[in-house]
Figure 1 (tube, rainbow, N blue to C red):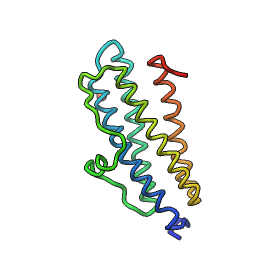
Figure 2: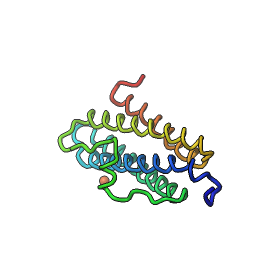
Figure 3: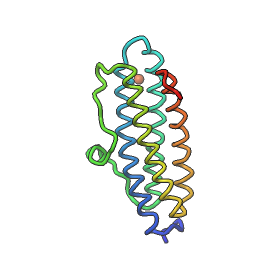
Figure 4: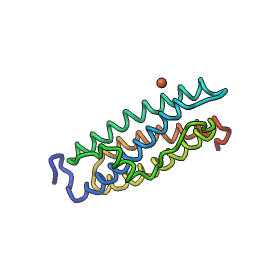
Length: 158
Ligand SMILES: [Fe+2]
């Protein structure tokens, strides 16, 4: 058992998955910043603000994930070299990217993150780690709802 009464063996996969998740979130975060800066056209005022709202949320989420890893007894990945190596979400060039393509990119990133969150919650349940479960569940619900709103924005919500 570790200091917060979780089995070290059972919590190890949770920590590893959280570190992968952290890496993916960082790449997603930086993509949102690029979109905030490079958005052009008739939706500028709407999306410039929306992207800022989303990257601000991602920043808070990233800090909570990293500090959960520390709470569970390991160090979080903290370099972009590690993030790029591990991340399933890839960087994109947002200069001259169409606004609808930006929104589709975010919907795609969120689908990856949501899939990872389900994997983490599965491992956390097996480890009896309800603290991680509760935290990740809230992050997932935010993106589930945001994904619907972004799909509605580009006229594809069903
Ligand atoms: Fe700004």
